Image 1 (spheres, helix red, strand yellow):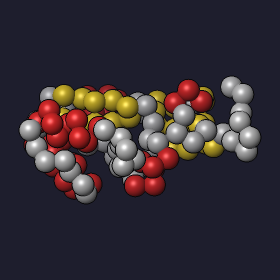
Image 2 (image 1 turned 90 degrees about the vertical axis):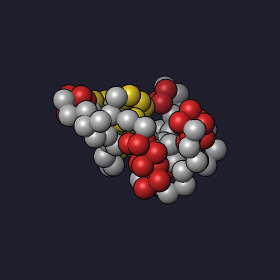
Image 3 (image 1 turned 90 degrees about the horizontal axis):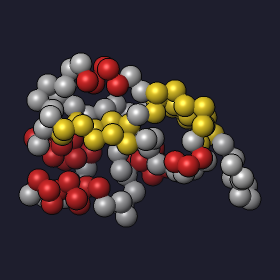
Length: 113
């Protein structure tokens, strides 16, 4: 991949847990947290991301603001969420830049949900 000015790869590990419980029926998988999600320590953390608005609309709930509200919305609607990459080299938030992937332990969540 050609790097733009001053962009470089950073090796990062996923630092927050999946959201799921024994009643989860739907599993939504992402790739790896964006810069904003990593800063916020939770999924789909950029304020312009439509994920939480869509989930709220689909579940006929309120758009969650806090991490606890987001977890509650997911779990009350039997939705689990996680990313498939445990660690990788990445430039910013660019999925297309991802390399040197270590996959997440998906059997851990699939065996319990």
